[in-house]
Length: 475
Image (cartoon, rainbow, N blue to C red):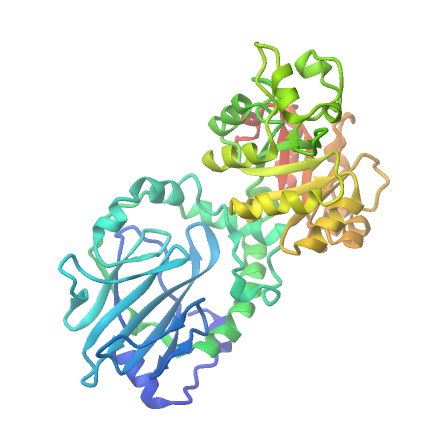
């Protein structure tokens, strides 16, 4: 136990309910290489229909059950993010026999039963399997083996990508999700990456973990996030922090910029995100194009806003890939497991909301940063969706980045200083200290000079854009 555990309220208003919850606490079979185990369990005992206090569902007693127990199982870490909460529900008859059980599974829940329909018990205790690294619960190993490819990727190349997780349960309550805390969590978890063995011989008795009433756990978790954020700052110096590798217009040095080929190449080269520019067609379809004029990329006279989307596709030369819509890009990048850094070049009435709606529809809000030279546009996006991450761009070296970001609630600042001979020297010392002290992240211009890239990585910036994203890989 660490010193922060002393702040957890371990009082029990009902000793019989505590004894009951502890007596029937489940057992969990973990992967032999699992690095993370539960820290605390928040329990709720119910004897009539109620709303779950910690999961979006109604709790009802099935036939034959007179008592239910909800176990909210808390981990400090999932392999992909700081903060993890999974759930187990078991139901007892009048003799305290377990007659039914359910558990959480990637945001949903399932009945826990064997192939023959029986509850999975070992020595009278509900015994479940935990997905390696991710901790979703299953009654049999087949569920987990069918997901083995996804699980291996989560525990390996995607370890830490979620940063500090804030679920709907803690929206507005956990205040520590910042670019800095996300970067630190990613760095820490990437170091914990592993290849699952899918050997579940490690049986963990949940009764050995501290059990408290759910409300006590709920009250404690926000402070726990603050504690971890401060601890990681001390443990991981700036030069060791994970820097976002952002492919500028895709891997634009190797393929037509903003094209599917450039996006695919970016993924192959280890990019975390792609930076793209969003403009509007004549029929107000958001599309991916840096230039308003079509001449440089497509060899066509005219501008993006003069044509409808269908007309732009029809005008595409045979040796060029058609312009992508914003929604096509999101679908494509999601399939490649890459996030998006959106440089909004043009916006109209309701366009920001339209983009937000598309991002949320595809479950990509946590994987998108909205960026622009126009602070007013970013302010509108942040107002419409406070959880959206935003980044303000500027070219002048005389801008006060902290004042600029605070005025519109931005999360990142993005100096566009690629035109300077030694731009990294402007970030050293007080500039970075002020920005970091304000909890802001720093995304840097597109950079292709290896010595500048190394200097930026040593400074611990949050992200670097590059036409050649392979240059952003660790030395």
